[in-house]
Image (spheres, rainbow, N blue to C red):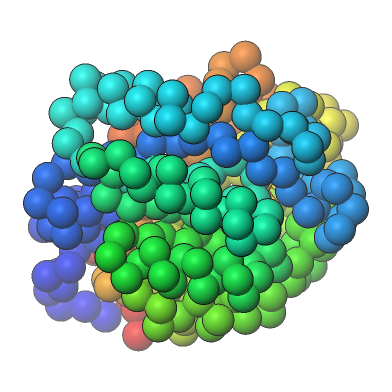
Length: 313
Ligand code: SF4
């Protein structure tokens, strides 16, 4: 049990926030700018599975050969302008978020990543992918880019329980994730683990074991959010049949605080909340903004007199 907050943990926030990490690293406000680079997903096209994860919004799913409608450079310009005006951001990380952003040949990946890095205000890239879709060539490419630019590889674990992964049609196992982290380690780029809490059968005490799994691996940051159902998904259908009962806000805040207490202070926290546009949001309907969830969790840690890593071994 920690007796004093470690220096990595922000004094007021009680969390090692990724935003502060970026500010320390780059000396200014850095924002992530999302781009849709036209990738698809092997858990839909049959190479790993079909149908996709039960929470994935397949209404907006693009067929494999579809190109993004808006050129990458135009997406970047619009995204950077938005963050400059809204947050005063000076530098940017281009976030390849949508679908599986290493699911293409090394030549295609190199072209996309280099185009993103070409803008003088872009300090690096963040690449979201599945742990079973990381070729040796993709890893080598990211390693090469990381020699002089910032790179974050975001690996979707979602749940550390194979039974849940199977139930949500995730199409990979916990071992796949552990193997991908080990192959990605010691390459001079950050590794982020993406987790979701609230799957059917996902009990809080079981979910907390994810903190131990992350602590045991060379993982630099985490993204956590509640499971939410959006239109066009199997999860929304399950909700309407009464087979998916969303977490309560109070329950999620308590478990997020429990999770952070067990998460080592060295791991930065990128996110604690997931939101969806009102038009497709089904459940839960918490109606919070990102920072409201962030401060709900911070206030819970304050109330307890604890902080990130308080119970970490
Ligand atoms: S891996 Fe990602 S993109 Fe693919 S089906 Fe699952 S959530 Fe959707």
